[in-house]
Image 1 (spheres, rainbow, N blue to C red):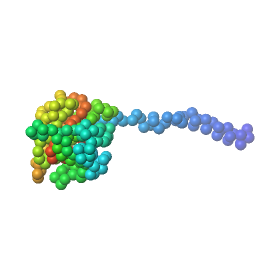
Image 2 (image 1 turned 90 degrees about the vertical axis):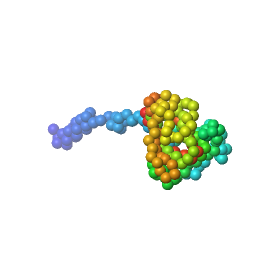
Image 3 (image 1 turned 135 degrees about the horizontal axis):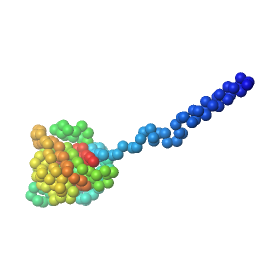
Length: 208
């Protein structure tokens, strides 16, 4: 056999072997990476609207209005119940945290005689735990879970349960008030309503 013919035949065999043993040309990336990881958490960090954005009566948005959505969670403004039982509806403003709010380094929400509503119903998972940070600087707070009647009092001493959900508070005194964390757990959580007379909120997070 001519030596050139021999090498041409040998090259053809090698190419055929590589094409048979190599990976397919389609679908290699999705197979290598595997299925996409399921989403199991979502947060409202109050960074969406930008610092200084105001919602509520001064922004002529009535109670129940959608303020914005963040992380798949719809945030609304709701009427607030004072200690006397009277209703108020003032302002919710995104702003940089006051000096006493050591839990946060980014934008927070200040609730002044107003409640904020957080709707977890459109998340791609069922929220079975919700946690948020707060800074209390005076007056009373409101808290409602899954449409329960508003609990009026202090977030440092919330009811043991609301809407069939366990409520736990962890907090510490700071100059001018108290700061801490509220954790809700025990069953599916569809909506949270929380606000105060002089209250700051940060990192409202839902977990599967």
